[in-house]
Length: 246
Image (cartoon, rainbow, N blue to C red; front, side, top):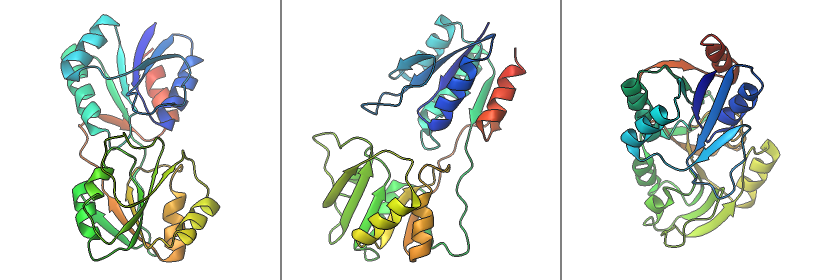
């Protein structure tokens, strides 16, 4: 039996777990960070919560006799990706990263590309009045000191009670989002700027299309550096990779 640990939290991770569940000879555990209050429950055995850094993850891999590690985390969850790389190397097991392709800027897009959330907040000053903030709840405090800007902040769960948030409206919702929905939001709230992480995938890409159509600029946060290693871009390729190791 090939024992696989899937570092999850994405739709791709859930799809991979569902496919692997039906493959004889593979036993998978999917790990979720536990940051979302009511996460979509993937197929198979699920583990929720952190590992306690590289040492904790290394110990877990050994205790559970994991044969293969698949990193299918969010492109911006780079800390767990680095922990996974270090732990897999220490234990001496194969590791695969399932990394969905980043969005690419098209000719009609107006993107202001930045390297991190701090730079995204800085670039808004004197350039925006009504902003659609679509970065989740973890880093919204970075925008709290900006004056003269109204924010529509979309996230799955509401901010933690003691979080300082910008002036505006919190919208709790979970993707995927339709193009019609995104057009309506941008128009209704008179949005002139979107702040987005370059997450890739289809679930939240409609806002980028809507911005393109409406001539709205997008402050696009580029992805952080991920560890080197073998990568695939889709679930099907990840399944093939796992089967080859049976």
